[in-house]
Image (cartoon, rainbow, N blue to C red; front, top):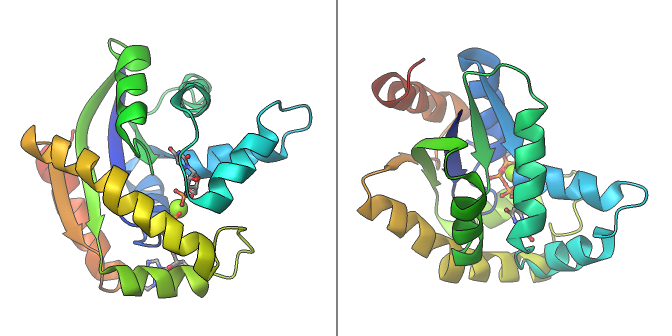
Length: 191
Ligand SMILES: Nc1ncnc2c1ncn2[C@@H]1O[C@H](COP(=O)(O)OP(=O)(O)OP(=O)(O)O)[C@@H](O)[C@H]1O
Ligand SMILES: O=c1ccn([C@@H]2O[C@H](COP(=O)(O)O)[C@@H](O)[C@H]2O)c(=O)[nH]1
Ligand SMILES: [Mg+2]
């Protein structure tokens, strides 16, 4: 059984940055769904490359069968891990249902780390990121935020109703955020 922490929040809220620190210090393996999709998009021979790029540019959500298969493969190929930080997934109802269908009995969701941050700050962070992402532009960001507000936030609310959400405000320095994140892990997960 894989231990899983879902890490959610608006685009640019700092999910990848904080997950890297948790992986370094707390022994969880970081799996960014977006990174896995970008790698699949680049993989020679992938039948999904064009479809994934279209969704990424539009800020829309790739069908769950593709994303969940990438996540499960990555977990199975990671060897022994205390747990997995599943960053940026599930993003919508389709993702949640697909995960439950495919992973029930194989993964245990310990909690959901919700990095909350005002959208204008998140947008500015993405525009300054400088990694050459095809979706870090004003037009794609508008769509990504719309998708977050209408599809992803309701999933966070769903987990909140089940008592699984641990919110950490991420409009602060990385050090301040990380200190609170460590508290959350100490209280909730077996570290
Ligand atoms: N607390 C912070 N304060 C200032 N800048 C930050 C902070 N956390 C992350 N950043 C910067 O903001 C940008 C986005 O961070 P990051 O990639 O971690 O966010 P993300 O939530 O994974 O974004 P996305 O959803 O687009 O993948 C990066 O350039 C990162 O260096
Ligand atoms: O579960 C997922 C995760 C991501 N996507 C698509 O990728 C981009 C970028 O994701 P980041 O988390 O910002 O790296 C996202 O806008 C979606 O288009 C997805 O479809 N499903
Ligand atoms: Mg990210």
